Image 1 (cartoon, helix red, strand yellow):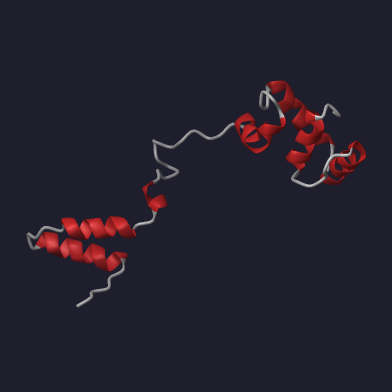
Image 2: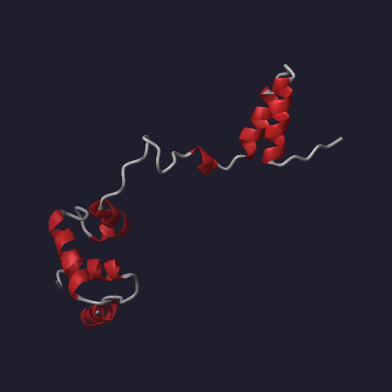
Length: 119
């Protein structure tokens, strides 16, 4: 015989088994297998919250491969200046004039221009 339970039903069965003095170890293992992986991650209000990624770390992850030493403070400042002073269309036009691919997000276009020494 097959018994089909959702997570709530399994929790109820575990509670009733333990309330009756039974061992629910196997049922708890089944419950762990049903729970999504992200449920075990800390909650946002948890005091064990992970540190947020800095802007330089994020840029290193996204466009750091354009630069030999990654995104330094100097490069970061240039990228911020480009982002603040130019819109997407302007950056695309600048890339096209320089013979660089104009595909990608705004920060990628800015990184391409800075890495080629154009700006």
